[in-house]
Length: 283
Image 1 (cartoon, rainbow, N blue to C red):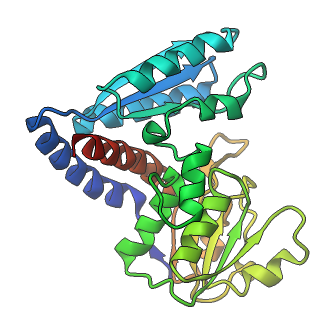
Image 2 (tube, rainbow, N blue to C red; image 1 turned 30 degrees about the vertical axis):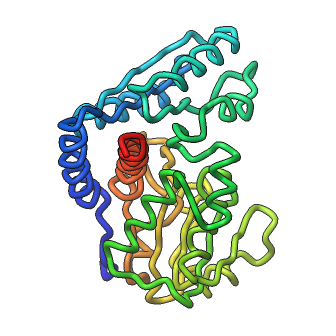
């Protein structure tokens, strides 16, 4: 492999050590960062994600509350609990694990979270602040990607950046952050014509499509920085990203692996947002 490996586990460990120190200092002043996580239903992947988030809080010295409901719960029960958490001074961050059961209006649930506690960064008020360049909270996965660039000393100014995917969770906020870092940004999606034309121009390529090993070596500009946000399970049970890691590693200058790349950073930046919310509350 010729590409530099951008190790999410190592970077996450370093950041979490700093967060623990900051959390201890905050606790000494009477404020312990608190995160509430709501899980509706029994989706196995969601259960794993929530367990990892709760464990990460414990390791960083945060207080956390895991609140679970059966899949057929009345949405009003969840809305009532969100109202209680919004008013709870010991809770600085609230997230509702997605996806929700079909009888829920996910947009309405996200809007019910107080913007000052919306550590996922999905509330319309926080999305608007990000768009204007004054974010309160940055969505965790794009936030983690930007930390990769900073840690690796990658200057984004004037670079051609291509984002594959236009989701509200990754693609759109990723594009905004790259734009604010003075990159020239192209967002590609399922209707983009001649996708490879765009990817071959990219100095920075962020893949968030949800298609296993979709990005191949012939689609990548030599010397590009490739960030693989995708996580896909193969028939043999193994995990892989949206990028053909083996092939692209021979072309790119730097690349994130799957697993061990963006994934650990997503939870790490959830801790960052919760800590920042607690620090703001404590003044």
